[in-house]
Length: 412
Image (tube, rainbow, N blue to C red; front, side, top):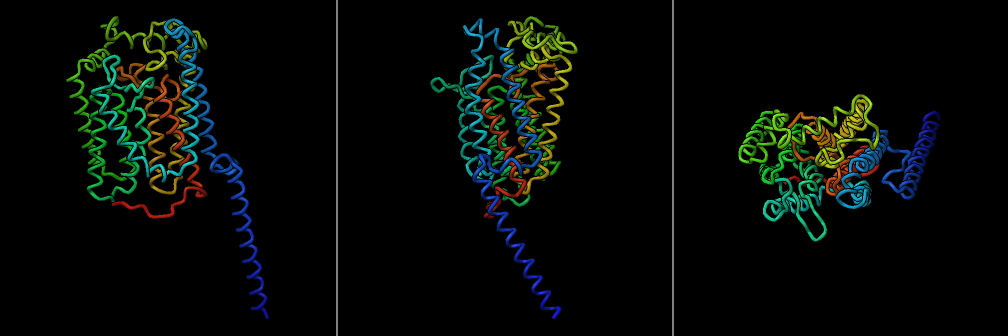
């Protein structure tokens, strides 16, 4: 009698569980259909919620800082104070569209078509060394009608995807695939050095090194690659008078402050004149055509002049929070692919920001490297939105509700 009652009780509990599971899946399906995002906001991880707020703040801050730093030169050279601001806003619209597209695309699907785009952009970087336009001694742009492409910026998100494809299962990937990928990455760095663009080549090497370390590559191998990269960089500097002058002026910019050290000296003057609280928004003096490239390569100097030490500290704190959230996302990812993509996105956005700040403050040689979401330039802005979208997508996939693996990926 007791056994039959236990059976009845068990059947009731089982039926309730099935009903609950059915209702849960039904409600979740309804929420997914009604939401404009891959997941309804209410079930987003807290890292994703913080991240999208940070991206929004970064983008809006960038528009404001660019408007302040560029209005004088735009009114003098372009005839309208908002010339650069309007063009940046124009590029922001497709950037947000691309961000939304990436957010709604499985990382696995991005990995499938990343290789062909990576090699197309690699070929375009090759072309820039022969047919690209030269600005300030460096050939980085291709002109297609009214469109100026900078392939070395556009390739960054696809480099992250290809590096994830390689390092996600490094120990079981066959040697042929390893060799082809490593040669491709090495060729990319050499072509960027040839432009010459030492900062982007260094950033690319750092990105690959960190992703390789997280992917399980032996430290001895990574140290060997780092040594080769350092030697190659030194050879590039010795063979390019343009880069050699940048390095020598970085060591003592005041020695030749009217020529090779002019940019760094003016940048340091801008940062120093900001004081503790800054001159105030829009009240920078150095942007009145004293500081070259004040709205691209040295925009942080204008920010420091207008917002002072306090503003710089807050911005560095902002980058620290962004890095922490990126790390939290990567730790929560459910597979090696999304984990490495998240690591790559975090390293690239924060690493490029730190390198830009280092150039503006004289902590590393003067070189052209945009500040993500802030410096003027459609190519950099598009790449930044793409990378930010991938990072947010990794966070949403960490819930296990989307982006599930249906088939085993072939490693051969």
